[in-house]
Length: 166
Image 1 (cartoon, rainbow, N blue to C red):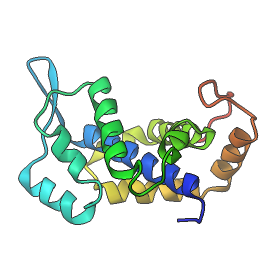
Image 2 (cartoon, rainbow, N blue to C red):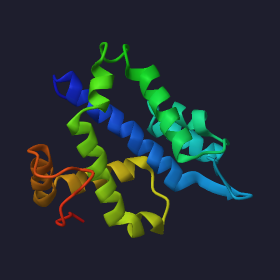
Image 3 (tube, rainbow, N blue to C red):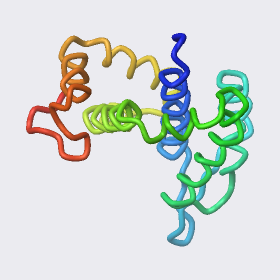
Image 4 (spheres, rainbow, N blue to C red):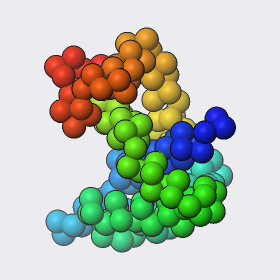
């Protein structure tokens, strides 16, 4: 963590969004055409041991029918309850969510997911493994340069150039 509360908030909030994506990737089941998040007791215990600060999000989604909208609303509630006005001062979370840095972080995470989808689908990994893989990928010079270009205005994360990083 840095001394910059906005950079720290971006990192914390992005981690929650990434964790929620990992949950859906790892634990969604389909029943009668509807999607549910089902985390076994053993997996839940492991998550609480390994990701204590994120684990309550599982409880908010566990055994409930889920949709993209419900997950986003739940993540925002989780972030608001744990970070807004508690860990971070007033308006820090809102400004972080609206920041270019956050949008780029989520965009780059999406690029990573798309580029690694087949590997991620091969076996269930812990969130720590996802985080480690993502950090390793982010440390590549090509990815660092891509981030710099995005931050400098060299591309809109919602309309990327043809040069993507995989």
